[in-house]
Each structure stands twice: as C-alpha cells, then as structure tokens.
Image (spheres, rainbow, N blue to C red):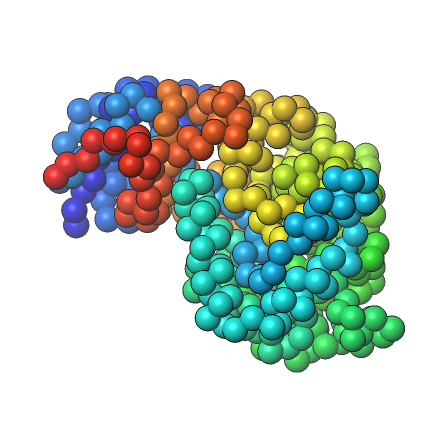
Length: 398
Ligand code: NIG
C-alpha cells in the first residue's frame, strides 16, 4: 500500500486526547501519515512516506461529518426565503413545493443535482454525509430518493414521514399506514436509518412513535426532527426510543435537557436553519453544561437551510449559541460521527478512515474568526485527495 504524509502541519486537531493537548488532542509541528484509506500514524514534522503534501504550517482537522442533510431534491424556494426575510414565518408546508419538483425530475437529473451538492460539500471540507429522502412522499419516489442517496453515502435515512402530502391531507393516518407499510418495505433495503418530523404541521407524538416503531422493527436505526419550531414531544420521544439523534433542538425545556443528558441520544443543532428561518438559536452552552452530547450539521435543504458550509454553522454556534471554537469544531466532526453511531470517522487516530481537511489558516479558530471566507485548502476522503484549492499552492510530491 502507498503511504502519504501530510507534513509540516502547524496545528493538527486529532480529536484524540491520547495523541495531544486537551479534548481536541492538538499536536503542533506534526505530520499525519496515511496508509491506503486509513490513518497510520501521527508523527513529528519530517515524516517519511511514498508521497508527501507540504502543509507549510497550516492547520489540519478531521473532515467534517455532516450528520443531517436532505441533498436529494429538485426545484428552488428562493421566493419563500425572500418572503420570510420580509416577515413570514417558516412552516412545514413548504416541503410540498419541493415534493412536486422532485417527483417531476428524472432519476438522472436527481442524481446530478445530488452529486453537484455533494461536490460543493467536499469543497467545504465535508468528508462524510448522512442523506435523507423526504421529498418524494409516495412509495416509488421515496425509494428512488433512497436509491440515489445510497450512491453517495452508506448513511441513508428514510424520511417518508417528512410531511403529509397534499393527496393525504384529510387522512393523515392513512399516510402513516403507507409510510409504515409499503413505503418502508421499498425504502429499507437502501437505508440505515428512519426519521420523522415530529412537529406541529407535520406528525404528532403518536404518529411519530408509530413510524419509529415500524422502522425499528425493520432493522433501521432511529433519528427524529425534534423541537424545531417550538417545545414539543419530539426530544423526549427520541430519548425514550433510543434514537441516535434528536435534530434541531432549537427549543429545549428543562425536562428535554434532563432527558438528553440522561440518555444516549445526541442533540444535533442546525443553526444555519435558525439563521434562514429567523428562529431563535438553540442554547448550545446550556445543553453542553448539562452534559448533553452535541453535534452540528448543515441541514442542506431547499427550504430551511440551503447551505453546505459547515464553517458557517461553526461560526454561528460560537457567535450565537455560546459554544467555544473548540466545542463547535468537535461537534462538527466527532459529534457528527457520534450522531451517526460511527467510531471510524470524526477523529484522526491510527486506524480511523483517512478523512482530513487542510485549512488555509494557521489554526482552526480561523473558521470562526474569518466568517464567510472559504478556508478549505484541500479535502482528503478515505486517503484520496478529493479536492484542493489551486490558489492555496499546497506542495505535493511526487
Ligand atoms: O430539517 N424540518 C423539516 N425538514 C427540513 C426542512 C425541509 C424544507 O423546508 O424543505 C429541516 O429543516
């Protein structure tokens, strides 16, 4: 196997406290040695290998793990965004607009759109994504979305219970019957997870429980869209049912915090959504101080968060959720991996998948300090250089 050394790293974040300073396991003047698709070693600068990238003093971090995205969709909702900026409130019903466009798109078109968004994420340092269905809302269309998603990741989530489609508006329980029956059977072969939007305007606690129970019976892991637009039953349902993640968590009661801190469900914050919907930001500090395990994700989707920038999410988490730069970086890497119940990504310990981002900056704090500036000099996925910024002039040999 050919080895690659990323050498002359000014600040290496490993997320492995046994390798370096503090919870981020920071090593200075380091080299990261990659063997095939795995991390082989963390060494001092000057390491020997078959090939070499000269980081020239830059910071290197684990690639971002984006544990909540909806990349498979067609259409555009810029008008809805503009209306929100003019004072309208975000509502779950907008999902149906994207459903019409997604149903009408060809499979080839959906695949190309998804690929383009995935490429955008790679340029933004995202080395692993979870991808949800949820804009088909009929059996064939949902199965097609799951199948397209599976071309890009092994963390596919079936989200037939995103919203009740227009044709079932007056009989939502019949739609839940479809989701938990034929639709689940068609989507499960492509999926690892099942998710439900437990919120006013989408699915209530009883319907959400039925969806999660059916998914668990089909062998899928559980995720829940919870407490996005107000306090509600979603978070406690997620914890009670052992979901890997409760996502959004914008509105958390004391009882929600207590449940999260006492369970093994990760609270996944999606602050780009709260930016785009003009909701309040979640109180990340309060959750962390109470002992809640947290993640940050982009929630890339056309309605509430049309961004693939994890750096933007990190900046919001620090500026508006009272998280430190260290906590936010860890939530966007190791936190995302925990939300997906994976231990092979999100850190740079020997044996981990070689998913790495090289920053065009001397420290990870620049992700917050220089908001809106694209600071990813190169992205390496499973040991392969997936993208590098020609302007960063990274030295590469041979
Ligand atoms: O996570 N909240 C539910 N689903 C998406 C939004 C989908 C949409 O508006 O199209 C979310 O924010």
